[in-house]
Length: 362
Image (cartoon, rainbow, N blue to C red; front, side, top):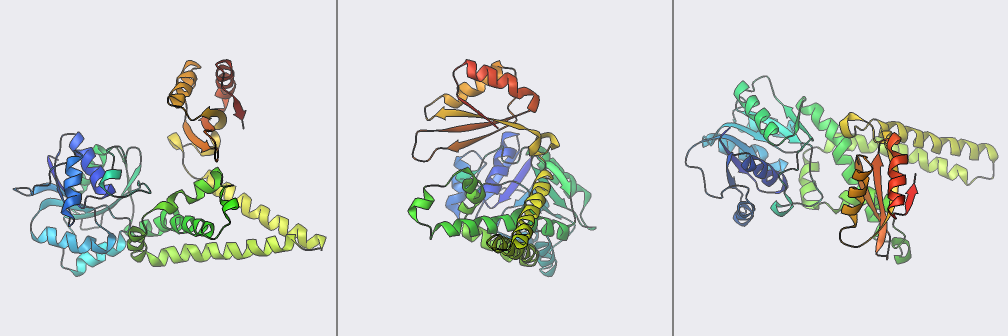
């Protein structure tokens, strides 16, 4: 691949363009918001000038409702040798493209499983896709050359290709992406009516659950409008779980000991199922997150403190597998949670304490 056209210069399109440009591909940028395309170009993602000849690959990075229309137009104009989209829904755009008379041979639906709660070109990074799954949904008609171009794009973005059926993909993302967004927003919405005193008690748990609730509503309306059925199916199952959990909690209020016991067992069942589901989520190197031990270090809000912790961990010969920061409300301090292999906890703790760090081990 020597040339590419990115149509749509939001977070995903600009991030892909930055990655391609960094690896020597000539990238052309276009967006119906010309100012956004110029912003992406100014960031080094490519040029906002139109290509003088057909490019090797056109990457359509527009909202799901517009994918088929943009693809069909680009194909009619002979923009590229191959076309793919990076939308979060795959079945609907493919069917809509067929309805518009588009060419299924030169098109491949894809979905990089990466993103941020911020949107737009200013939120883009060249490493957004590194190590992340990138789903490919080739059909029986997909030309081999287009599949190879898509695989080359994924390799240049340093992502991991995953082949799926388009409708199976849509059911999967309903569970692992679209429903979590709605649940995060529902929990965060409860905070709008909460007393200020309650809000000041917010800790890391509520911050984790509501992080993606900061996402752009307009973008999510586009996504959910293209995948409503599978998302509704998952939410209906969650609603059933919620009903059972509410009944279990009400039972815990009962004066009847047997009912309280049944209620406790109901809650325990939900928590155990949650443990089992959480353990299935792949972590670094395919390990589950529970494989790591956590060492929490008290840290002040001063420049250079994080770098000093990492340097001291390196001096202990310990690799930090993951890291989280838990801020203390109203204070210039917090805890840095260092996730490490369990056998490294003792060495790390001894070195950090020896260098003056206050440790809270869990």
